[in-house]
Image 1 (cartoon, helix red, strand yellow):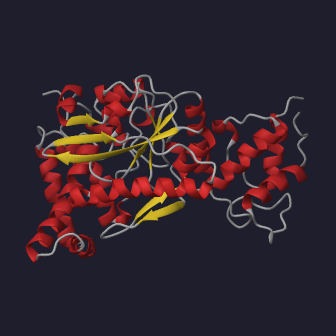
Image 2 (image 1 turned 90 degrees about the vertical axis):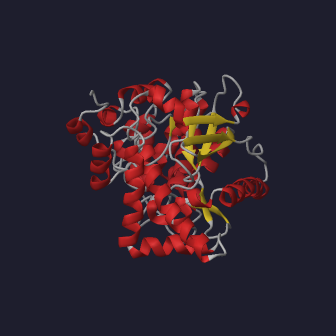
Image 3 (image 1 turned 180 degrees about the vertical axis):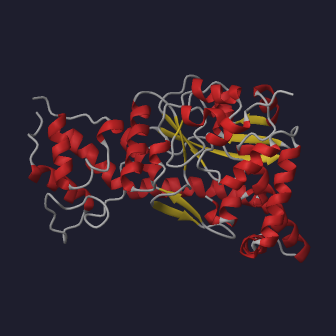
Length: 309
Length: 85
């Protein structure tokens, strides 16, 4: 059987977002047919939570805000640990050999909010549900450059061997222009400013960027949610302010084994009054996140385990 | 018409963005930690304001290094190096 990535080369190209043990496990599990690798990683994350009591305590703390019965709380605590494992496996395309297999597992909703030939837009993601929702946009033919200080860097030469070739190519051809790279892993202000400057250039040049609202960085505002508040960062707000780009929130959740990526209507256009503008964004994102947390509490790993980023 | 870059002009822009009236910034004052404490957002604001005021265009890959963005003085040197001679 021909595997999608050589072990040695994939090990050398390990994206920094994965720890050494996690990446080793992923590469071993990648040899199994899908979905075995995912299932095993789910179990690993549950077992890990049983060993690392702090993690299980956090899971129960999250579940107390969402379930009233003891059984419900237990189910939710275990489920969120298992989902986290599945999302890690899915983020590395574990056991997924090619684009055809990936297409069967990813579905895009709300595509009507993305006008054909959309240029200069910010796709705003969240650490909720399966990661890399931009893959659905790419498969639908939209060019998107991922922007961030730390990531998987799919489509970049440094990590090319870490990914299935077809999926790596998908990222290359849909605009991974290097807003993120290995030089901006550090969390200093200079590196982050560099990333944002590049993103601005891409937006002003008519390209689209994908950036997360709740990653690391300066907090713009918090959205109170049951269990834990969502901390919304300021990077994307500044990009919106200095480019006037429209912002389309994108969320992702798992339905059965399918990653459903939903593009929501654009946030209100930029208001001349910064306080009113911030309030409008806070209200729009507050509604969206509250609805997500109510419907999929078992998939909110970032809110339950805030240090998992 | 663009302004001729001066250390005072750069300092004024950085101080305005930093909104730190209590800090008496000089050429050797660090832009980030231990100095004006600009975070990434304010650093970007300062760079964009410098671009607009002094009519220069930065190349992020080569211009934004730890050395060039270390102090008010090194930022001034960077802006001067970007001006046509």
